[in-house]
Length: 429
Ligand code: ZN
Image 1: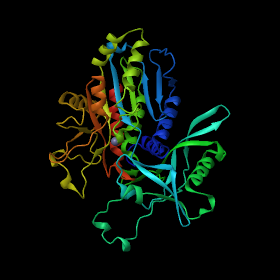
Image 2: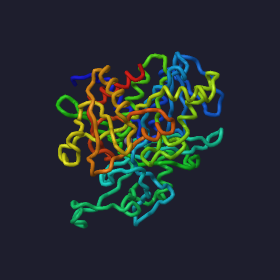
Image 3: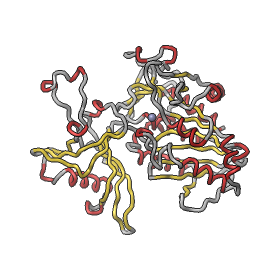
């Protein structure tokens, strides 16, 4: 390694301990609490102190953290960076189990837009959130089998000779996961409940409703001559969550109130109470203003002085598919953070906000690149446009370049991760 290793080791820990949005949220909360941040309940009265840090959690899967500025928000605004905690996954339909001969399976439903074929023939673990009955009643708990317990087997090429010309997997029929080849332990529902009970060490009878997902438990791995590349599941968008959190925790209290946004459900359109297309952010920001003994006038003045950096993965120039990129806007791996632009405002970026982000990169001494889709290919989108529109604040969409976005295994550059942390540190400075 020819560059600092600690943030990358910490990133790998974060990726490995966050198989689902619930675990990512727990990992974020653990780091915030270790940094002295105090948890606030949305149903409680808020008393905030200047310079102190707080956070709010919704649905165990989204977090808004903030450090109260030395000046009032309507004097200095909110300096915000946001990302999403969720990634494409196969969600288990726990009760839709099926048994064929001696094989026990669970049905799955696709969450988000995974490259489906990459999920087959993987040793998959099960993780998510379950309701557990304890002495005080039902409580939500995260669960992770950690070990591989399932597989979605492919069909042999001898039975599908055309498979390498492209094959459309039918989610109802072809993506059921095999749990065991031994029907003695009961049906898939019972087997799954048994695995969950074992993983969290409670009796099977204490396990209630479950939000469970399959994931690839293979840890993040570095490679390349100088370890300049890494591959892992969920780099989109846990790497952005990690970069924001690292910069946010490192920052000292400043004049502006620093805000870190970690939304759920970006992969399915963000229109949930814990997604970016909700009232979550506005509610929290307004309550910060109200805790300063101020009202809506001051809230709107605060928004007028605010700024958002929305961080999500970008497509690096693919060496094997160069024709897929606009050659003038094809970011290079380890070429630095990428500013995303789109005429249709699929990204929040304008010339004004792009220059503002370039200035952060200049101050951090890191390179900066730009991406725009080919003009004949529609662009993706992310949390930037909806968050800036809902709040009426200017913003920029940025991210680190990567290959194979939404594959079960994605690849990105270690130097880019260090660069975006440095740029975000300048935002919060
Ligand atoms: Zn994303």
